Image (cartoon, rainbow, N blue to C red; front, side, top):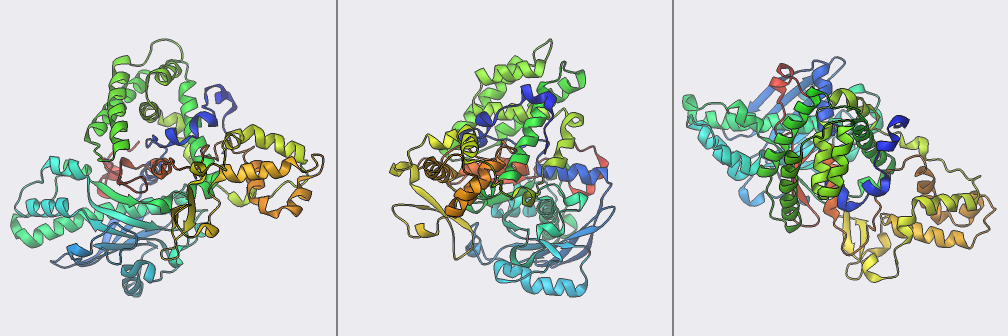
Length: 550
């Protein structure tokens, strides 16, 4: 995406934004992918139905949920299973789940459903076709699911405290798209307006899974309670999202797709700069800011975690939100910019990034168009400029990658980790360099170290020669040379930290990406995997068109 030159003075520079300490404090915004999905469906007046419901009293069978847009339809095909408690696991190596899903392009026939029934429950062990866009699976949150069914079966509503403590009836343990296991490639659907923004098919699949989780609980309540059973209260239903367990497999994506990362961060930073550039704060924006702040404070109070890093961040967040409420929006010229300068001096990174989200919230008319620039045609930026001189190239490298050249990569703590792909699950994993086998299969994730190696080799090369001559002699540096040239146009494309360091926290990378998705209640279970909630507090399909979604 191309930023607005008029906001340059208000835009946070990459060296402020692109460090893990701040990226690991990111909060979802109105530009997060799930919010973009809901706004687009609402604006285009999508409708939703459930043409198939073949679920028995035990909660097993299949169902189809259809989303009907102006040009085409998409169907979530859901399979419910009777999973023993001892087989329920969040780990990617699990082989059975409470529910499995495929997002079908169009409306499936009976033959399609039979084909999917033979493959989707197997997940990686099965195969799907290009008519499927997403493959996923989910497990029940056993305690809350059982509580909701039991209460509804006896004609009572579940306890709100129980719902708030968990926040979802099911949590997905994998959501696969973009060609995995036979699904349609991203290129096949990228020109569709409704799917052009990143991960829209995946978000649609998860959103319809949320509807299925509630329908399944209500169905099982009727099976148990008969005429005594009642549906879930809509206000309580709204507090249920879809949980998700995410591990290291998600982290390298941001490093392997630098232009996409740039466009995500650039959109947010351009939106934030537009708000800061406003000469005055309109009454409607002030009211919206106050409402968003109150929502953020309520969310922070219900956000729980046992992880020491996140516990400390929650303490900071709650204190910082109270400080924002006490300070208020300054009066006078450029109030949003003045509020931000106060925040930089007064709040933690956690509080600052929460404030970014809060400030964007009441400015939809000003910033929502930026969602159209968050996809990326990466192939167009693939070509190298071999005519650039080595001297010119190295000047750009030092100017934009100086952060990478400051680290001693001969010191063991600075190269303690390495990234590789698991042969068992074909998922990225992280190993300890001095302990684990497989270093020879290391992925090019340590951008800092790779950059330093390139710079050392360049230093001994004739500076007046074209870069092409250097790369013919040293083709091992083409990967990094391409990134250096790309960084001139895509300033937010690199995480400016050493991703091989012993003290690096992969959960910071995960939080950055999950915030772009729109995830809330980030709850690390270790430094390498987390649980989050998606769509909590947002509309369900049956009430999307009945309310204004912003």
